Amino acid sequence: MASAHVVLAGLDIGFGNTKVVYSVDGGPRTEIIFPSGAAPERLLPVQGDGTRSHLGGRTVEMILGDGTPKGSEVSTWVAGIETHKVQNYIRPHSANFTSSQEWSALLRSALDRMDVARVDVLVAGLPVAEFFDVARRQALRKSLEQAHRISASKTVEVRKAVIIPQPLGAYAHFMERLAAQGKTLSPDSLVLVIDPGHYSVDYVLMQDSSIHQASSGSSAMAGRQVLEAASRLLYERKQVRISVDRLEAVVRRGEPTLDIGVQQVKLSALMDEAGKLVCDQVLKGLEGVVNGVGEGLSHVVLAGGGAPLYERYVRAAFESPSTLVDVAEKPILSNAYGFWQSALSAHQLLGAKKVA
Ligand SMILES: Nc1ncnc2c1ncn2[C@@H]1O[C@H](COP(=O)(O)OP(=O)(O)OP(=O)(O)O)[C@@H](O)[C@H]1O
Ligand SMILES: [Mg+2]
Image 1 (cartoon, rainbow, N blue to C red):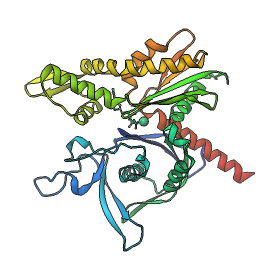
Image 2 (tube, protein in one colour; image 1 turned 120 degrees about the vertical axis):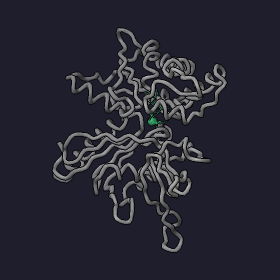
Image 3 (tube, rainbow, N blue to C red; image 1 turned 135 degrees about the horizontal axis):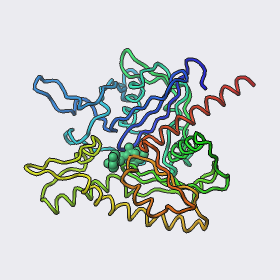
Image 4 (spheres, helix red, strand yellow; image 1 turned 90 degrees about the horizontal axis):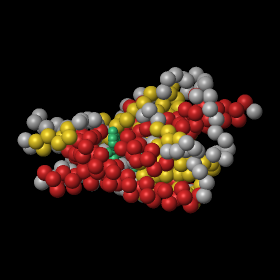
């Protein structure tokens, strides 16, 4: 296990939620999840006493500008907020998420919530397509490996950062769980990892430690589309408009019903119906990918916040006596757990190099 005073972390900043798994001094792993909403404090609603409501988020200080004392200013942001309560808020959604101010605020908030002064090894992920862009990968690593200012009195330093393809986190977590059961996988076994998140369903076909790039990719039919379909169904049936962000907050809080004026709508039935519409489309595409491989899968690993919704349909599509479907106990944290596992391996490797 890790030697004394070592902090290892897996960080998975998604468009929906920020997930962290970390350990201090080889102790138990701690989990953190918060919504990936971040905005400048000045945009948040004013309360009766004149102060800004932080909507459940926490403040971080960002230095914006060109980095010189003259050309820079300190801007207070709040990260971890439910965005449906922020006026005129436009959620970031672009391939350049990791270069956005929102991402930077979420990173700082994740480091702040870890309550450590230093992280020895931090592993984060990039979507498969972006990972193969070497410049993008190196830029992200460099931006992570520095002392991050949280406030005037707090800084958290990241000593070493490692970037891996996102779904490899879920794969590493799956391998860890197999090993804990005393099982191993033949190096020829094909494992399909499916990660339904908020903006994309990422999938990757793995054989041992190799990615089958041609059989990996991403579909935009993700959690957001399920929520959009549910919002549409609500409008068609009850003539009420409920925003996707509000629906998302209700699902996140695990509330069973939604109050719409005098009525209450049972959320599980609505989400099931909306989920089926979206999952059917994604799985149809995936079956084509799998058939193209021409060989049977040994496992299908389902990860991500959308896993509870997808599980039934994934089992119906793939489960057979020769193909097992695997869902972690907390699939939303699968990538972060696998990233942590990679942080541990990287740390052990660094230690071995120092000794040699
Ligand atoms: N219990 C649940 N049942 C169904 N869906 C859920 C549940 N909890 C979260 N979700 C959905 O999961 C999605 C968020 O999952 P996750 O945190 O894995 O996404 P993300 O990693 O932030 O997104 P992306 O990978 O696209 O950047 C949301 O769209 C949310 O609606
Ligand atoms: Mg994700």
